[in-house]
View 1 (cartoon, rainbow, N blue to C red):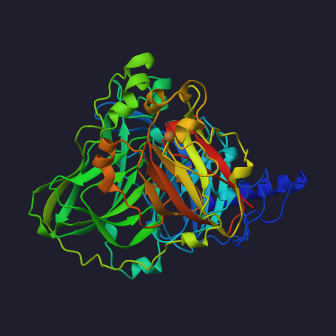
View 2: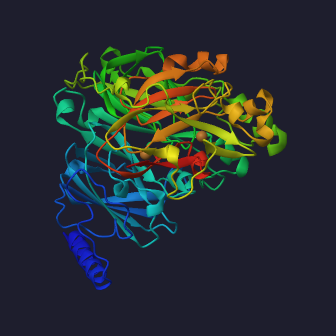
View 3: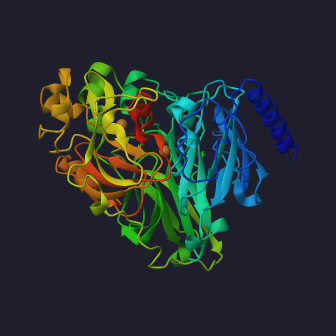
Length: 558
Ligand code: C2O
Ligand code: CU
Ligand code: CU
């Protein structure tokens, strides 16, 4: 109540001063879905009293101190949430973690978030995976300073699924996420509720991140500067939900939904059960699959989410069950030649090579306690977009994720430049398109005459054949804002055979997704539809260091 008064007062003062300055514009966040207003300097700063929020949250980014290791605390950043309006379960704090609260809402909820920035850097929050307007998307151009507030007001239009939120200030996303600014945003809907999936204590968040600490328990970020940035940050220990203790104490006979988020800055995981049982996945970024899928192992790139089914009825008490990372032959590609020993100096304390096995979570099977959840064979009706509806089915819009010149990660040769958007980044509202995202795959389209793809696109010292180029190839976890696409093709002809063999059975190409792990030499065709909102949205590499270096661009829906 107090909070709400405070805000009303603040909003009154702001509104009054805006009137005085002659700046006031009509309701900033209208209730209608079609939001075609372009960015206004005051968007985000005032509360729209016509917006009847079902859920109203104050979310502060603060400097915090967290007991992650024993003895001395670690300096962190945290999102601190407090509920102004909504049912109690809306906010769930993760005890003893720097990570933000889990926000739980229903599809159709009208959500207001009052983001207050109390860290001494500019920041803004992005709702990863949510279908919202430009003003609500957390564009880097909307960053606010310490002491300022940004008001988000949107309706939850997404289907049930595991979404998340994190900062998006250009150049500093990697560091702010690394220090603890991230949280899950979980949506439920009627379709999901009808299924009798695990809920409450049987619905378990699992945020996987890698971190490195120095001798005084402080987080170490990019200790090797530019070289770590080029490669992306790789930590030497795994944190689960912000903690080093990776044990989950679960009940024998319990049926669980594990909501996995790879919240790491750049690391991907090849996840498997230590018992060699297949992993049963029933949901991805954009919600439930049509039916569950069993995989021998699962490749989870940065920003990707999956729902994993875990039935402990065949386990015995105290049986050892672990989710582990299996080796991926990626180290050479990334640290060989130029990226490693060579001209960039040595990578010092990476004790967690990709090509090794390590534990992710450790499941402690406790005493028996049954819940009556189940996993049906039919989970959902198909959500798939039909590529036949795409305007450009036979000539996909192509985006090359590649190294340009010397040490610059680019998309089609460009880097992020504020609101800049170019002709080939403009799409039409209410159309469906196929986008081809290419990481040096052997593509041939009209804007890619040279069959060698990435090589032909390179200039300067990278343009001279495969030797140099190969050293510069890395996976790029590609993410598109504002929408959930379907994967229609994953081409691996140009992927290193050894690498491909190690990961090929771990991809899920079904379901609606917003982030994919694009291997070196791979290209993928994605079908997507631009709906409801005009404006600027981002697409980028979700290796946060690459993103911060500018491997990010706007596309414009008009
Ligand atoms: Cu989770 Cu623009 O990113
Ligand atoms: Cu996003
Ligand atoms: Cu990248």
